[in-house]
Image 1 (cartoon, protein in one colour):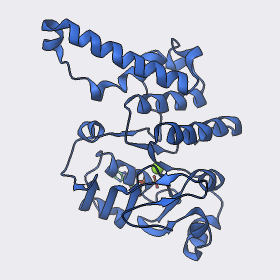
Image 2 (image 1 turned 90 degrees about the horizontal axis):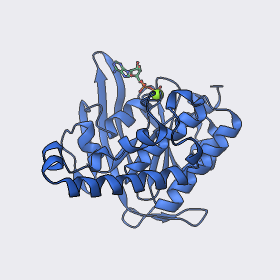
Image 3 (image 1 turned 30 degrees about the vertical axis):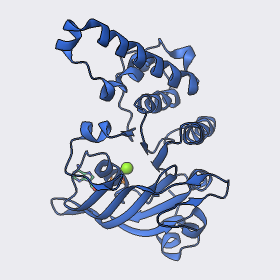
Image 4 (image 1 turned 180 degrees about the horizontal axis):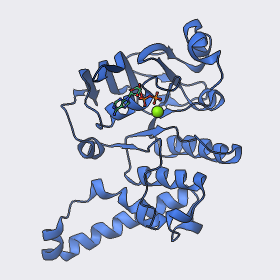
Length: 271
Ligand SMILES: Nc1ncnc2c1ncn2[C@@H]1O[C@H](COP(=O)(O)OP(=O)(O)O)[C@@H](O)[C@H]1O
Ligand SMILES: [Mg+2]
């Protein structure tokens, strides 16, 4: 189904493009612990790519390598056709990679709108001094950032809580605000670490719909970690399966579901 250069068409008729991010032989060690062992895979433009595997498999570590939070011990990260030098997370973010966290990381005392506005920080050009000297430019930038933040807030249907402090929101809405902040950065690639974890059925359905809508509406490439196999099968175009830091499967949801190694390691047991 996959043509290396050209991409492929999904079962539901979406066009998937060329490789935008490629992990080549990534190994990550913490002292004696090998969190990731020699893993390679790619992410294609417009794709929803899932990373699954049991607890401790190394999924979050992999997302942290992609987002620049961890520097791999070995291996290379390629982005938009170029090898990426070691980078700080904010530099990776500036290149168009936004993320949410397994444990919500918002400013609890700040309003929803202000939290979403922090997603615009990577785009702000005017520093403090230019802001003082050249007020016009800073104001124009502020206005543009606000327009984009408001657009994302509308899109994710959280207008009614835009002034509410995040601390007062139920869990499911906090997760949506975190998604909004990531989207406000207008990312090329969006990384979601267990976006549905801890949610009730209704919240999960909402989040699923928003993830699909984001991909559809903005063409955003999405890599997500998810435990719920039903969700993974519904959402993703291709799936990487990790177990004890190793890659044990990679393919369409159907291919992965029928892979005996995957069944043994993961699907056969309850999580
Ligand atoms: N910062 C860290 N320091 C030490 N060990 C870590 C760190 N982050 C992750 N690990 C270890 O790496 C392994 C993979 O963890 P993680 O990537 O969080 O797995 P998953 O997200 O699949 O549950 C685990 O053994 C974990 O204890
Ligand atoms: Mg994790």
